[in-house]
Length: 160
Image (cartoon, rainbow, N blue to C red; front, side, top):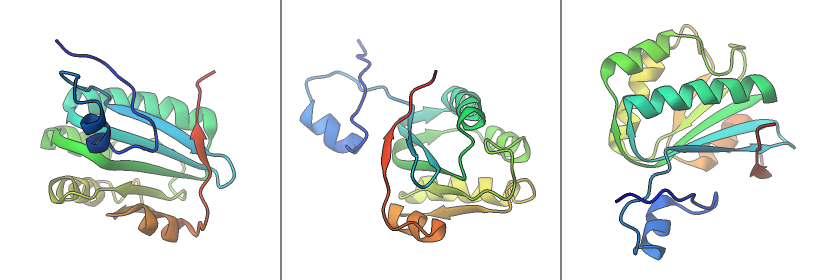
């Protein structure tokens, strides 16, 4: 039996699972928040990610980015436990229309694990034509440095 729970935005998945270890399974594929001060839309993927979840995320993230029109986007994969996504899916998404349609806007992927870092670098290589300002980093601090941000002010984003 799986229990669907939402994780607090400031809590890493591993910490949350430890604190709530009575649950059989935690399933939170993606969620987002927005820094209105700096205009940064951040999407966070967590847990075990499959092709289907990547497609769902990409569709929903595109709708939100269009509505919010951020100056920059971050995809934080720090809480991804496994990324069971096919090479074909990565290639198709990398060559397709970006979530942030303006190619000049910076996009940053935070990938802390070696496996996720390798897959995101494949996305970076295959998508460099449509995403010239895409960066892959291992920490949030590196992302803030690229964006020239000293203080972040993320809060929940609610679809209207």
